Image (cartoon, helix red, strand yellow):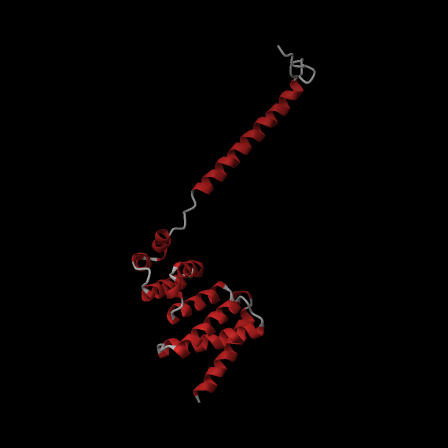
Length: 194
């Protein structure tokens, strides 16, 4: 049998003075348990971000588009409509995720590439948006694209180019230079129309 040394243990009963310190220990323990319970309550009340939950938050139309894209992953029109709905609902990160999940051949289509450029721009990645927009316009020189799509893409390309020239990566972080870039790019458009 092993003998446990007793030198580390108190052999005398606790005095009245130390019962006050035990009172503080109890309150500290109760406070820690309470904070842990509060943390668990807050942590468990967060809603998981699944496409269906996001669609419900953005409206029935978005939920329907999500279902359509899930059922028909090769439907470029549905993907572009879903991206537009996400962007209109101020959810560019979700739009980017939907575009990234699309098949590679779908992402190369001009309309989908244009949606990706808009999404990157709203996420604050101006340089990346400009590169994607220029790639989309290059694709339209080789294959037929809708004139409306080309016109919007050219206007956005001028704005993105001016933002990059001004050194604006995220337009939300520098609104004054963003307005200046917009005015300069629109001036170029008015010169193009004459």
